[in-house]
Length: 183
Image (cartoon, rainbow, N blue to C red; front, side, top):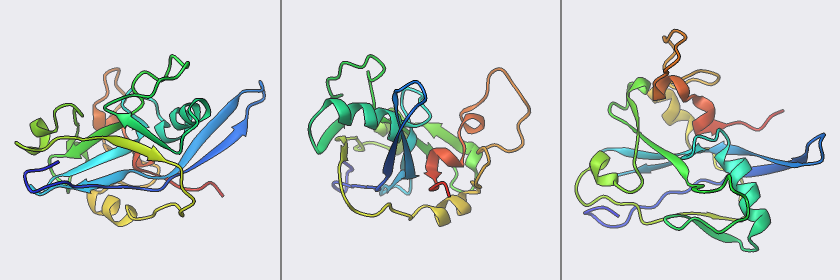
């Protein structure tokens, strides 16, 4: 929600499932982050990684949730689904924005409970949902990521040296915004 009304965004991702050698299941998502342009010129990105730090929110979390809840539409935020899997406490995606859309190192995390702190008065998050669909995987972010200077197989901060306390830009990479279908 914004002072100018409701804004919505979406992306279609494909979650692929496979069996592990130990007999367990594994899901991995391909696709892209949701990019939501806001009236103040800011952009909110809902990444492929989870708010809990998981690297494959779209695959692992969604796979566990969909297995345990017999529904085609699941609200992830603000009400997390009830599951028996303790790893799924808050399965919403990680939300980020950029202070400067030409500088990938200016990435900052966005608090889903306080979008106004990042985007101004009157901006709030209503909900995040996932829905089963047969639509094709969306491919709208490649040009936007290139303009941001985010390159495939690279971190958002390509100049950093190894450190025990990496910044968000050093921890995030292209794969958190877009994951290609493996060939």
